[in-house]
Amino acid sequence: MMRKRLALALLLVALLSAAPDGIDLLLDGRPVYTCKSFVQRGGVTYLPLSESARALGLKYSYDYQARVIAFKIPGAATVIDANGAAVAGQLVPLAHPPLFATGDAFLPEEAYTLVLAKAMKHEIRLVPHQQPPPPTPLTSPPPPAETSVLRNPVDIVVIDPGHGGDDTGAKGPDGTPEKTVTLAIALRLRDALQKQGLTVFLTRNRDVALKLADRPALSESVHADLFLSIHANGYKLMSAEGFETFFASLTPTDQAASDLAQWENQEPGAPAVIDPVATDLELILGDMAQAEALADSQRLAEIIQERMAAVMASENRGVKQAPFKVLMASRAPAVLVEVGFITSPREARAITQAQTQQKIVNALAAAVLRYRDQTNARLGFVPREVK
Image (cartoon, rainbow, N blue to C red):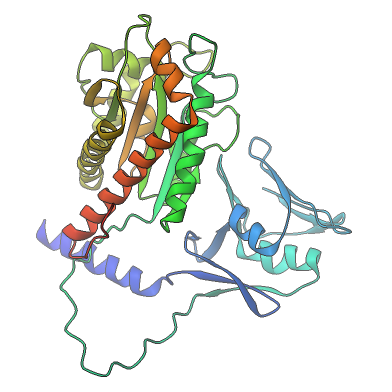
């Protein structure tokens, strides 16, 4: 076992030393964007559509269901799909199709150097990011702290606003749907975490329907370090109130947790099915890396619950476990936060207000940063203080 772990560690060191820490997008030889959230598969580099298009000043539309990306370039309308590309009606073959995810797509290098370069009539290149050499110190620097090769920094976060489209989720007494509350909080949280230097992806940034499997699939495609699903609870008794945080487990904490997981695991229009999830989780728990991710999920859930308790006036329902599909399909640490009961008249009024939503966002952002700092400290890095 020790030999296997050592071999894996040495392999990880080799991969980290070979992979660049970023990809520079060059327009006519001038860097316009350094991408930290690139993906490399089979020797091909992919950049996120949303970030790279913004850097190039391009407007576009993206249809995930049809797997089509359309760029609005005057005189050279450009379309890229799974079969290739077209610029002003002229076909441009692509050896590697884009990677399609619900919240964003990832374009291969040739989509920039061949397709968009042709449409924009400019040279576009992708090159490994080069860090400038550090200045020569006046005195000899102290020896570097001993650190673990298994460092897992929290750089990429996927936020999952629950429900969407025809799947409204629970509804408040005045008819406000859960999907609206979760999206509003997710958008605010994205902005807050981006200001802290984190790369953030949303599984949806508008009111669209998503399959349950699509949500953690995005997390996998962008190699997320954390997956955070946001929901607002519902119950037949309007007196039920409080906030709670879940992480994945084969055995639900209680009947209420079991019922909630069964409700959330339903695809719109399909009957609730919870038994197949158990098989998935048993497979996951057999994987050492995934078992560690589940332990980290519990730690993150506890930090979130603590931070939420400091800002919310409702009942602290604690950290719980349940077999949520969106959590168990993620190989990264993953939690599901129920910010309150939208079926409670009093709590619905609170969580639909911008002021309370900002309190929730502040708590969640502080929890993510605290989790990151604890993780880095455990691996020998100095954590940033969260105020």
